[in-house]
Length: 136
Image (tube, rainbow, N blue to C red; front, side, top):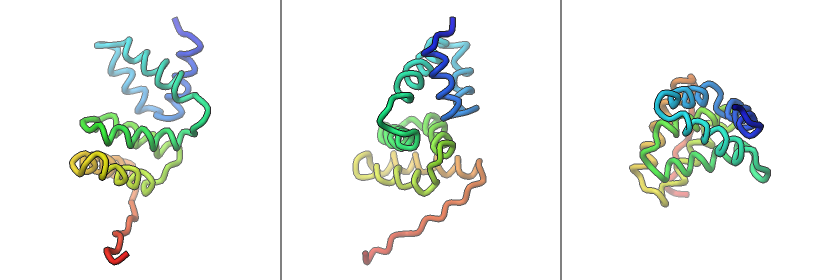
């Protein structure tokens, strides 16, 4: 039975994650379909549809949260793709990850950066970042 909450969540999931989100939900069908439903209804039907933040802001927060948690590389992959889908630039994504270094540490930031690098490569995106001059 599909509810309005599920439909709202599915539409938002498709808007943000597209086929990546659909693949995640599909991958749960044989092991935990309820988890897929929770992702759709709660995360995307209730949280992502709230007022107060736009989708770009939500993705920056999500990338930062997943970076600081560590061990979330598959989810980072999906959400870095989603960030690009909703209009964030590669530079903004890299800066959000880099901003986590003082709070989460270099290993987690390095892992997240390598996920971003893989996503950009798979989407044939070149990142033009300049190294900060140490005299600044």
